[in-house]
Length: 396
Image (cartoon, rainbow, N blue to C red):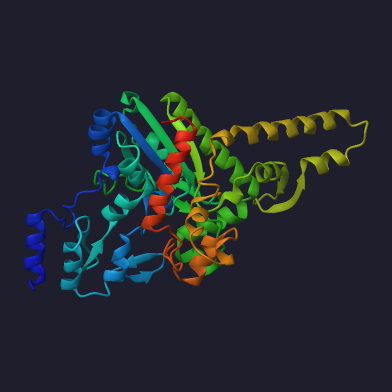
């Protein structure tokens, strides 16, 4: 067996990448998007969303059996193998890299994951004259991925046809634009946003970590069901405006939280009236209807104003592109489609993904991994099901 230095030399000769010389998957290469997609095939399929679109942890299925990785906080690493063994793993596949990071080499599977992601799979097996563009952003919410359409400002007008699939992420995720965007630019859609959740942190944690202070401030001073829904509607309005501008065909699916995106939930959330204190803490919550019911018949002006507010809520609800939302083979979201191949009541419940993450165990037939992400074969299933919907919508 070659030693690590000899292996690295051999891999470099054979084109296997040693960071920073590796080549990103075509669906994640901005130059590829421009030259081979927009100006090449002139037809593109764009995936918008979080890690479910990016393809996080969608390794080749046999890799889990041949080289079981070590699981660590929603991610997998191969540092449980010796350096020579890691090099051997890289040589065993044609889409892996060895990356020197934190004083050690590790196996980098980003190309494999991009290859297995549904954005690539649907073009590989069905939309063969389309170029896949994967704008999925792990850990981010909807806004971050949608914003990539604008931030990179590619010449989309040169395309003959554009299909956009937004696979909606967790609605509570709040994306903040990064001024460090492009700091380590490598020709790929590098992180443009950092996402905060409405997390509660103790004072000591907030003092030590400014981001935790921001998240706690978001929880206390900004976050509410209404804020989530309004932000989502505005993000989707931006996406729809972009699609209209470039005559793109939009199809909307859900990743793992379809129950957060219903007309009734939107209507209930938008009908709430919040009263906040000077430091923005919620003091009281009522609804438009409760406010109307509190007025006397002679308070006609107030009755009229709040009746108008109810109409505004309905118009806000209608801003969301409900007519573009599809189910995949009858299932509400990506995770439900994947779990339809597993037996067990826990896999039929809303929020099943969170239960899987909490259990720390992959599903019996490996349709969903222990991190809660769909496996490679689940991405292929999604691609097949989505193509059926594109045909039904007369997009292809």
